[in-house]
Image (cartoon, rainbow, N blue to C red; front, top):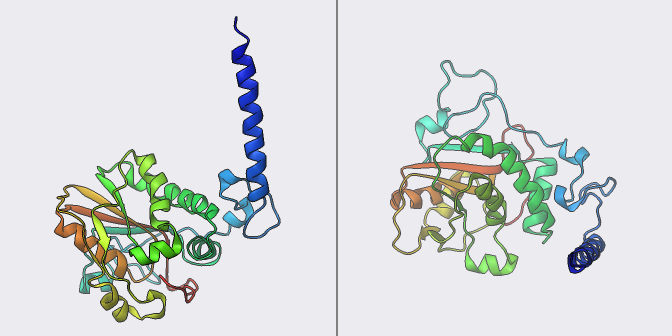
Length: 265
């Protein structure tokens, strides 16, 4: 029996330990939010106690936009008044958690603080909520909300792509980032009211190339507030031929959640 295999195995183990040690120095295994408890890389550097502070969206909600009903639930359950008055261009929109506290801080630090470890944590939240919903449906692919090239150069990555990739892998479908492009560098959505948000992104997206889509497509973003951005992307997918569109976001701004911070969208 050759001695090379055991020796190589020990070398690989030693090198792996060295690599983990280097990663541990660069990204210490302590929670990046509370800085108190252990939180290894596979947990996205967020400890169990901080994760337990997430407020998951559950209970009766609008079947169209996914906004949780407050007060009396319509009987029979149906779309909310806003969706009845102005139906969105998607078929269903859902989000995992309320946009507040831990979720909102992790999203903002991922996007604006260049703290990439939060992508793993937030993607895990998205997969936990979205996978059971989408696993039984025929999905052609996931479309992350694109960034304008200028914004992408500034940020160095598109957070929607990082959040969507683990879900695409879990579903066994492609992540498609070459069908929709952002053609306008829009104003800061967080500073605008609903009407201004709709106008701000009305012509912000367009098709890329001359592809034709069929079937069910899922738009993925980090936060769903008024839905203006997701609606603009969904409209492009409709023009490309998508038959069914679902929107999934990590977090949703709701009436009983704190307002998003005044940051660039």
